[in-house]
Length: 396
Image (cartoon, rainbow, N blue to C red):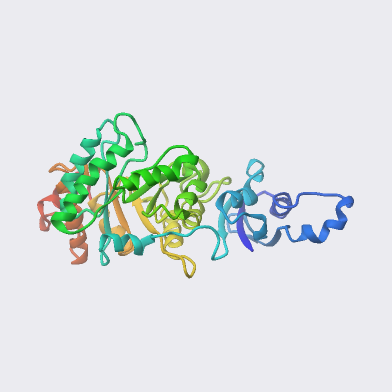
């Protein structure tokens, strides 16, 4: 059984709406001429399991759907639980409980990413190529050569950087691969570059093959824009042998208010948590509540907990708090996440007043300060790179 929790706002007839969903999203209404099919249709009919009143006057209804109504994927799941009714509302999908073996789990997850990097005992530090557009492929390699030697673990394209003629994706991979090879020879370690994969759905696996052949060791996918089916296709294909980082672009159009209070849409814990994990993402970028986007801490933490607590036999997915992350939030981030997290920064690295290399060093200095229980706001006690970052972006 697949169990879905819906929230109906105060004033809505929750019992009526829940029944409409249970029947309308499965067998639909039918007359006496199909009575001989009643037993067969019963196996496809959803059931309202319970309806619970909430303190704000809303109601949460749990509806159980037969798994046989799906194709064991995300697209058929979403069509069944919310497809047509999403046009009728008001209702918000708050949670989905799936069978443990549903869909496609992460191929690498936290453990696989750490194994590739050979980093097992600390948070990971991730950068974003900045500026996002207007750089050549060689410009990307030049930026990477500034930050790679400083211990950086991960770097990604900006989500709006596609296969553009000014810096084709394949050219970016080839140029950056040379830097990564030099890093491996000099320091004996790897750095993962999540290159933004794009294009038509029927070509996406071939694109992944070409990028891997050119040296790509991770992929970035705008899952909501290209579709969960594209994520599933990449994650499940045996020829795709690199971790997939899922970007949350467009999730706000479906999730609504970033505190999860919308009466419509799908909760962020489902969009960026459950569906990403069961769709095969290895890491998921999540808006940090202490960053530049107005994202609620409770939403962020629900996503975190779903990603890192998979069913038995599934890999844990790496949460990547993003958007406005600076060295100054390190203490809070580690209190919220512990070690199993990647701190993802763009401007805080590439716009550091002392240069991009100093931006990376500032993050590692912040990690060290937290490890040794030195408060970040005591800037006088910290190295120059961290002190400069705290002066520019603040911290606690």
